Structure formats: C-alpha cells, structure tokens
Length: 595
Image 1: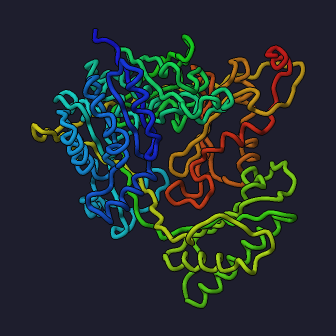
Image 2: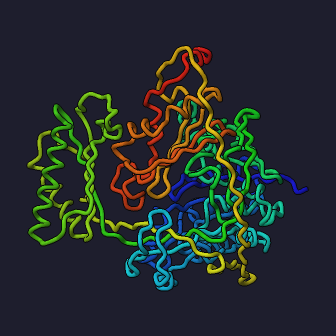
Image 3: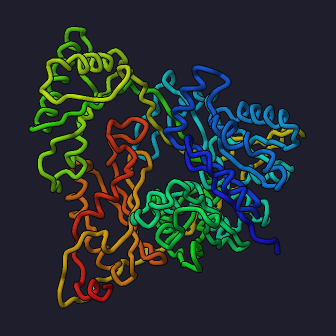
C-alpha cells in the first residue's frame, strides 16, 4: 500500500499572505503544496484584467510572491506544487513561471490543465439558451459576457502529475481538486472509488481556505489571537482510505482543534449529503472530527454517492455599474445626521438623473456602520455618537453612478456637522459582473494537459447515478425540568459564508447533548427574527449527526451575491456572529453540568 500523503495548504484566496510557503517548507516532510486562489469574485476581477491586457488574468502573486523566492527550496525538497492560479489565463501564468525557473537555473517541469475556458463558445451557449441553475434567470446578453468557465475536477491534474510535472497550473477547477488530484496520483484511486474520492475532497475542502482551519475566522477567536501574526497554515496527512489528520507546523500560532476543523468542514457546503463536485457527490453528514493530540485532529467517514455527468459552468457578465462611499460622522445625533445626509445625497442625485433623462438607480443601499445596523430589529446599543454611513448605488450606466459620486461628495459643505473622513480621490463607477450558472455535459468540455512533452487529452469519467440516502432524523428534544436562555455562543461554534446569493451558516454543538436544543431553537421563526432585515426567501436546514452539527441555507439573503451586491457584507462572513449573539432556550441542568 502506498505511504500516506502530506499536503500543505498554502493559499486560500488571491491576496493571501506570502508567509505560508516558507513556513510550510521549513516544517519539512511535505509531498505537495496546494494553492487555491479562485472564487466567483476573483474570476470576475481576472476577466476584467484580461480584457485590458491579453497577458493578464492570472494570480500574479503566485509567481512573484509564492514561487519566485521559494523555487530553489521546492526543488531541493522535491515538493510538488498544484495551483489554480491560472485564473482565466493559465498559459500566461505558466509562461511567467517558466521564465522565473529558467532565470534561477532550475529544471522544474510545469504543466497546464486547459479546457475550462469556454469564452470562445459564448455564441454556441447563448443559442442553447440554458436557464440559471439556481434562479431560473435567462441566459445573459451575449455582448455583456466577460468570462465562461467550467469547474473542472481532479483527474486532469493527476494526469499532469503522472506525466512528471513538478508544478501544475490550472484555470478554474473546484477548490478541493488541487488536493484530491495529489491523492489520485499517489494512491491510484479510480473514478469508482467514491468513498476515497469523497475523503480526499474533504481534505481539500479543509485545506482550501488556508488558516481558516487553524484558528482563523474562529468563533473562540481569543484562543488563537495571541499567535495570529504568525498563524500556522494547515497540513493534511491523508491515508489511502481517504481518512486524514489535520495539523500545522510546530511552533506556529493558531490552533487545530475539533472546533476549528468542524467549522471549516461546514463552511459553504450547502446540503451536506449532496456536496456536488465534478469527480464525486459527497455525503459529509456522518463525518467524525476527533482530537488525537495537541494541534492534531482526525477526520473520517466521508461517503461518495455518485459522479455527476456535467460540469457546473459559471458565466460572469456586465450588468450595469455600481459604486459607493463611506462618510463618517461623529458627535451628538450622529445617526440622525448620517441618515439626513444619505437621504439628501440620493435626492440630489435623482434630481440630476431626471434632468439628464437617465433612469433611476436600479438599487441603493444605506448602512450605518457602528449603529448595529447589521443586527436589524435585535439591536441593543444606544444611538451611536460615531459611525460610518455607507451609501452605495447601482445604475445601468456608468455616468448614472458617477452622478451619485459627484453629488454625494459635493454635498459636503451642506452636510450636518460632524462629517469627516480619511480618503483620497473620489471613487469611480465599477462594472457589476453578475454571475450566471448552468450545467454542461462533460462530453462537451474537452480537457487537455499541456507540458514540455506536448498536449494530452484527458477524457472525463462517465457519470455514476447518485445513490440518495434518507436525511438523518433531527435529534428529539428531551424533557427538561427547568429552561434557561443563553446566547447561542454558549452552546455552539458557528461559521458562515456564501454560495452566490445563498447564505450558508454552519453550527456545531460544543457538547453533543446540547445539539437537540440547538436544532429546536434555530427554527424558521427564530432565523427570521435574526436575519429578516436581510432575507425574505426560503430556508433549508440539514442535520449532521457525525459532527453534532447543523447547516442552514438562507436563499436570496445577500442582495444578489458577492459579485453584484451593494451590502457591506455581501458574502455573509458575519452572519454566524449575528446568530451566535441571540439567546436560545436550553435545559438549565445541562448548563450547570458544564460549569
């Protein structure tokens, strides 16, 4: 049986700190370094960059900050590197990387996975006129499309490793594929090894957000705060059966615990029994998370339910323009002053739009940051004496947004007293790159690996029908002699994120016996109390008995999602914090037993 595989997660987004690569190399004993740079917002930004410069469109930091200073050590240790830093231009990324390798006199082999970029087939896809797989929206206008990318899987990357690549660069693939590919290459997993593929995918999911598995974005943040500046990046030690342990380099900051790993397990997973990836449909509902030592956690129990026959394909397209600005006020009546200023700025702007015979704004958003505006009707603070008024607008035309920016800033001398701020030049309108998602049969998306030896086609594995399972029954609430109300944070850890316009909140019980109370408390009625000012769509709840957790989906809760929303938190990063702050009922004897 092949030996285990030790993989370091060195990047979770474009803009990640550069300390991860040297830290993980210094830890030693790694087989692979993986880097995940892409999200829907990132793809939109990279598409805009490529539109201005044909040689742009990839995560330049991967070459200049992650690779260039560390290539010699990577070569010395024989560590292989897999990254989706190619964005919408993987060949340009690989060319820059090869140039740097040659300049350092090294002989590392670089391979590129191609096939995800379907922009050249835009007219063909428009003719088929698919609807959005989540909202049913029509196919976007052909002339407004900026990028079209299929979300590829792990087998093409594994094929590149099989051909001898030291560094593999991809365009858009699912985040976990960079890790799963290394497992496929090392262990020889095939397309029918569903449980193993699900386990490797889960390892990739834990690694894909870097230090979010080692104390970053953690509910009990104080436990990791002292070492935040030198936080350790995650390492997964993966076995041939798909189970794995999570740890971090010795002597680094942060924390690896059941809680930090379980929070990342639930992060942005949607239905935990149907986490759909190109290579496998995963069931994480029975996954167990067990502490096996200091900063060491074992994860096991992932199941594979089938293989989809299509790739999720995402289109970014220009849907008007947006911009906004922060105006800070302080002093007595700061909130009333900020509201009056925002109302006046929009009224003046609309009058100018009317004179210019332009339509009204397609959307406006005002948030008074510092006045508990994110808490809605559950606000507890007194009127704020210092806050920032965030005013944002969308308009079909750039000049419509420009009107707001000019008139709002120009209102400064007419404003109530206390207006202040640290700012440079006036903001400019920026394109709204909206997201459209559909499915394309895998047979319609040819995928190739290109390296120094030439180009090799990688046929997609055939789909395997998904074997559905009954959802686990929610835990019944036991009888209690006395009830107490406490903030949810006393009972649970939680983390939130987004998938398009859907907010995802994962909640993990601190102790198994409180899970029934958590499930009963977080009802639709309770969730509408907490999030009703953001959300009036439908809700889904899922129970995960293996990790004593639940997952909550709030559909239509993000103002259109991160690529187009005007919200201060368009990706629901703080939604878990709102939920944790609200009291819930629990058996009082359980609380006393925990003291």
